[in-house]
Amino acid sequence: MFRIKICGMTNIDDALAAVRAGADAVGLNFYARSPRFVDVEVARQIAAALPAGVAKVGLFVNAPQQHVCETFDQLGLDLVQLHGDEPPEYLAGLGGRPVMRAFRLGAAGVQPVVAYLEQCRRLHNLPQMTLIDSYVAGRFGGTGQPADWVVLQQYPAESWHPPLVLAGGLTPENVAAAIHLVRPAAVDVASGVETAPGRKDPAAVEAFVQAASAALAAVSASIPPMV
Image (cartoon, rainbow, N blue to C red; front, side, top):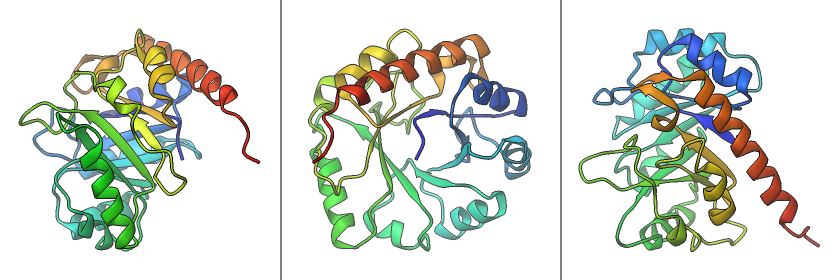
């Protein structure tokens, strides 16, 4: 499981800069309508350049299951990020490949997320991680709009619920406050560290990773040990 993911990588230089800054996961966006889209060949080059121990996450939106599985296997990805309208049954068709299910937090709050995860549990195909992004009509993510951090405090804490990954409008300036309020297991950023869609700002990436690392460590230290 990762702690800090920089998503929407479109070139090797940006990916390696994120790793040098301390990110332990990078995201490759295979949604053709996204400004951060990468084709399989470019993604292959980025993935091959990454050092061991850095999670390679493939982002898909309503893609055929066969395409997801083939891309995952060809590139040696570590995690599938489903960022569209994929139903719980969809996960079973991925052949046990690990999944991070993304949700856009709308007016209904966390209840649709909880209901979805409960259905996944009944079907024995729970995702490994749950990512919560902000809701913007007609968009599947990467909007730069913050999710409602106060509402996200209602994400359930039972042991079977997947760890929460916070996304949506995070920046080097606000990520620490978001972590202290929501207390997620990990964070994910794309637009908040860019000079343009798909072009990362190394200084912003480094500042984000430093702020997120310190806040995640502080939150972890404040959690009482299990007995």
